Length: 87
Image 1 (cartoon, rainbow, N blue to C red):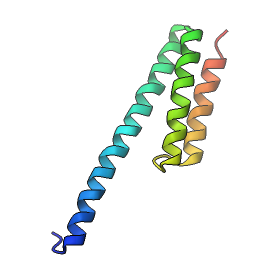
Image 2: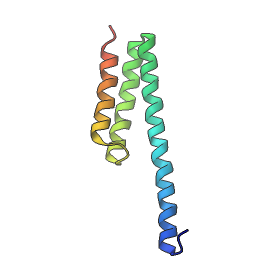
Image 3: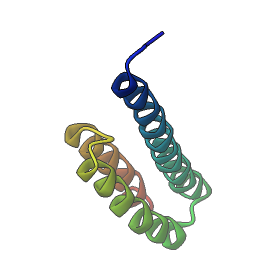
Image 4: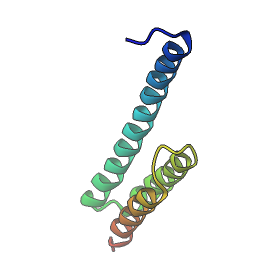
């Protein structure tokens, strides 16, 4: 276990950041799953609205360095292709 005050503080900060980042990733996954569910049900209008909600959240995660920009771009691209695939 760490013995320096600064190290103990760093451990607390890391745990807080880890929790916050996990919550953000979990929220992105939940929102993406909602889009995929709407696509599978064939509800295009609702899927487009849900996609419009998830894209800014993913972009914000990139700006906060929670997700890598290429990973985020891939997620957005795949969700967009699924939504656009509906007729």
